[in-house]
Image (cartoon, rainbow over all chains, first blue to last red; front, side, top):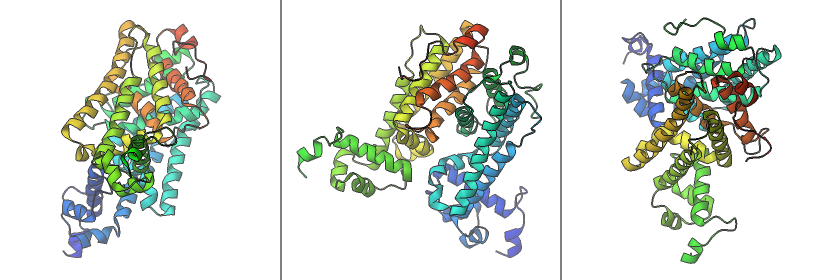
Length: 222
Length: 222
């Protein structure tokens, strides 16, 4: 295969490297990282093994790319407007997280399925990068709950425990969220946020009439 | 090794078979099922491989015992008093689930970590048994939310989506719940239930003063 064939884009607009990553993600999600060989990746993407190694010098570098993409996405999804109310912020977190997960279920599945074992395959620096992002995600959620408590918007509660519960509820949705399911990711975000925020907001009128802090049209993904 | 040595109890009161199951659970949780060999199990429990096979004819039968134990426990934890209020029922579900998970984190970890791959290792009947229990768990939670909606105790909401979120929040706690952590499983159950139930309960007085439907002394695991 010529170098130009290796580096040129594919018919669906993805680069070969992106295509390789997408195919490997599907295989890892279905069979596990341990149960997938580089030969399987090469076969599935229709390249010879040498070409696969041109892009990724090892299988663990493919897994790290999947991990880094998922971790960076999650931190970005929690980008925060510090002037917004805590309830609005939590709603926007939830919406962006669920829409993002629905757009790449397999990446989220690989991330959570392989989590217990990454220290076996990643370098210390790679592990440290992922752990740092995970800490940022937890702290972002905890801090916005604390902000709501401090301003009197939310009831006093254990923001540490609720942040962990929130992460389980939202990120754990990769197990059942389907891009073309009965409810869209946007609609599910509204359901989750409404139930959770009604439980946190102190002011009775706000709680009844605008628990999300914004007008929501569930038909749009604004 | 004599048959009596094989079948006698061990010093900590567990039978050899229970000890073998506990050791295998720890190994599967740490290294993954795929990454653990029967030799590793035999070494870790201090038995020869033939003795291990005396108890479990295959590695997959050990995994199935772990799965069946976790699935049966979860369905039992959702045993329901149909005369109780929906809020009380949800609080008791949460308490029993979290206390149970905290008592055997590794079993819960194996259950969730290996979930995507069980069809590779289990017979169709074994998979059907596990799936049936998982459906029961989901339906139990959904039905109690529906009961609360029907009686006017809860706001109208999508009980399907909220049941899935509830399962992610509670069962997903195996990732961070620690038996000797800063907060007990019982305390975490109170935090989760209070936030969630305050979000579901319609009556303002109930919501403010007894969202769990029962008096809770967080120092007891009553």
